[in-house]
Length: 199
Length: 250
Image 1: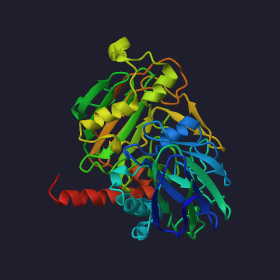
Image 2: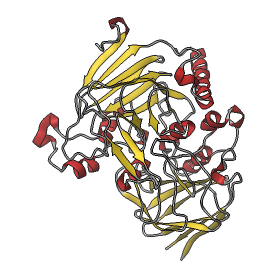
Image 3: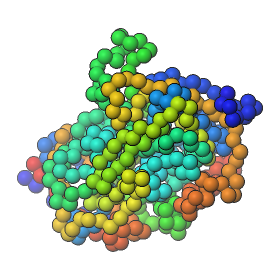
Image 4: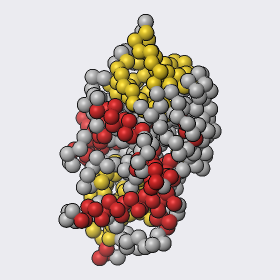
């Protein structure tokens, strides 16, 4: 049964509760679109996605089929059950007005960014900056070399690629469909995504 | 006192017992020196703007602004507001990593077993970074919502092409790292073994935390000038500091 079935435009926040056992599908409709995502325990948002615990537990930076998103309390929030892309980022975090000024120059200060989308999305649920932690970037490609070099490089997702996650508890999902125009994370042109929740 | 620092520059000098936590405020342009006393030290570090702790260390911004996940001399620890919390002005260790995060109650039991209770070991109990952070942050009116992925001093984690992570032992007794505060920084340290340290034996090491009055950065400061991104982060920090002082708060 379909619970959510939307085409979500670029540059906008989306939030929704995915109940335990339900399946969330995110579709990169046109390819190479970063989907910044945070996950919380819907009943106690102090328990939230922990990038460090998630990658430490699987000894790997990338998310794909079989990856478990772990919470700050060490509990599984969601499990990746299907992935046609093969690699999703856990280290790049969200763009912000402030980090944009460092990375690209002060002329980018007033450009739209994921930080603002996250704050607007969190506010719908009574949450705030304090609840903003490093996020997942679905469909974003951030390799790290053995020497520690990190780069946000051209995406590898193709039009129609999708990732499916099953909720291990009732979770609040907060998404920013990334508006970044200053690097290749969105193929230089942010595009819509599909968001589907099914029983 | 550390050998190379004159007594009159030392603001505080404390030993952090193995497994314990420490917290303090480092005034702008003073330096926090962390020393791995016996070569078994590991230090999980969180940092906040002491005047406005909602501004805090941000691992993704630190690594993507500098295109680097290993932090050693010359690199910066950035906040989530595009400003510099700490500059690494000296580092005699094998460097710092900021991917793996801290130990938790569950990771400690997984690695070392369940024999580390207070009942069995009193103050040599097995501690963990998460509970240490909660206890330390509580002293400042902060709580678990203020915990974010931390820096791990004296630890190297290498990443391969497929994203696999590997702990690399780099520690030597007496190594230290100097963190120069670029604003008033609230620092929290936890001295439990690195979360990926493969040793099955609980063997945390003591740390020494020395705060000393360091020279202000010059126009040619290596940390400030290493990249355009670093210069802009420093510019943001200076602008914030000027505004804050103009409000009469300093």
